Image: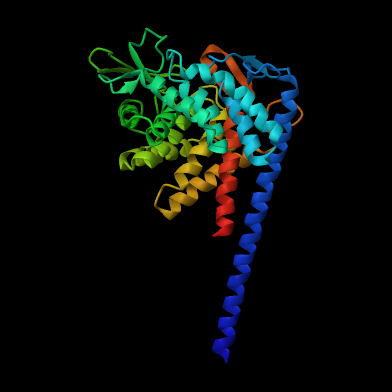
Length: 401
């Protein structure tokens, strides 16, 4: 009888723990929904001032409240349509869907023009890619496949990577860490009717980046310069970082995100090891408040600018990585780190609220050029929305399992 009572107590206690855990997860999802709902309202409100579909929000200068806009060829042009697609994905609002379609359409020309740089992935995959994922529009698929072929024209087989910035002749062939993100377009295309060569290019580019842009301590160079005739590595360069041997925050997160999905697409353990190394290095160097400085080695720290965009990209990459690693402790570490970034970005310190049309404050674009420092930038908003939607899906799946 005593044994029976003990077991009933244990069973009841276990059920209570499960019930409390379930309630907490439901509260987590509700909180995410509240942030997404608020973001969606802001995005829709901004449309009242954005009537020209081939002009795209990029940044908001200090003491201003409205988006400054750029043209189709700007590397940031795909982020605003992507934000609209994410807002539509959350809300189902048909007006947002129409707006997303309107702002996506002008980018079509990029897919069929001569490739100017590697940013085709940012421009087309974020716009047409999200649009195709959510609507299945066959015309969007055609544009995506054409864009992948256009991006592939920048591949140099002697180096084994995509030429990121042809407009910078001081680096005969250059590959930047940002370019890892654009590989997702090539991997997608190879699985959806494109040439197997696109997969091979993406894998080779990741391999070259892993070998030359990732340092032995798992910090990263922004740019690797190569001899375009022999393929030989010349040197690593900071470019947007503080110094050639410093750790530029957003560059580190491009690497986390890019190597995570590259592992998912290829199954290569060396890519997973690289993603883990980059993530651990990034988390290890975070300041106490959890928000990265624009460069971890800026001598002005703790008075250096922060970079909310790096935190948003990190959140996306870490959520992805948490679902790829096999070790349970690592899964929890990366998942919780991503949630912390999202919590910080969702706080009063970083949410724009009524300050301006953006979702987030305090991003840093190109610090060495004194450009876009401590201001809202559209790609921070894009990856913030992506991170929130990723987290919502993961929390919902946990609740249903």
